[in-house]
Image 1 (cartoon, one colour):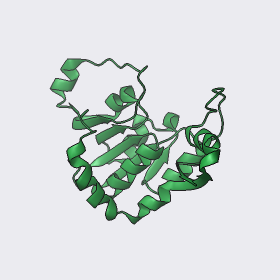
Image 2 (cartoon, rainbow, N blue to C red):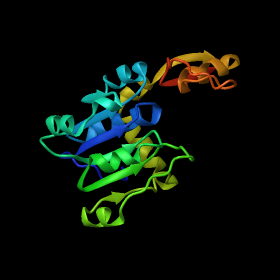
Image 3 (spheres, rainbow, N blue to C red):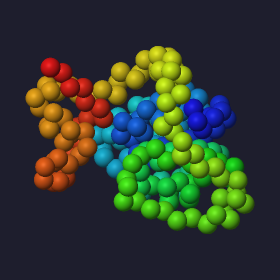
Image 4 (cartoon, one colour):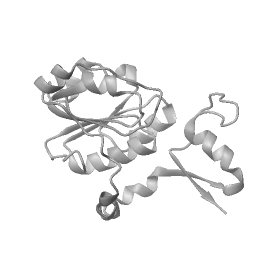
Length: 188
């Protein structure tokens, strides 16, 4: 909503976890074209049911972008991973908007301020706005597909297994694990 998405816009959502999938659902309702990326096969498959196109990150080249988006870059790019703004700057059209939404406090990106100024690129960082909650909830009621985002349920006592399958690594050891959920509901 902060992006001011118009029906003529093309949107790229980098990452298809819970935040990225939600952004794709909203974009699909508001924009002309919704494209996602995802490294995990489970989440990529899930996102392909939402977005118009979903790619592994290495597959989304500028040539592919031009092919699927009328020979232009994206109007809006959302970094739902937290470490993909450098990709956002490569994929954003003149006059476009980049929205960082994922969190990775170890990630830093550099860019030329003259490029942002000359190309009229907006970076929208004020996404956690509590005054938007009621508007977002009303909008969410119009998206019955939101229920699809909960792809598994686990007992509260099995919370560690639930988190491991949602984040793709073992909470205690850091061992990489396959993802098997976009969002897990914990039940008593």
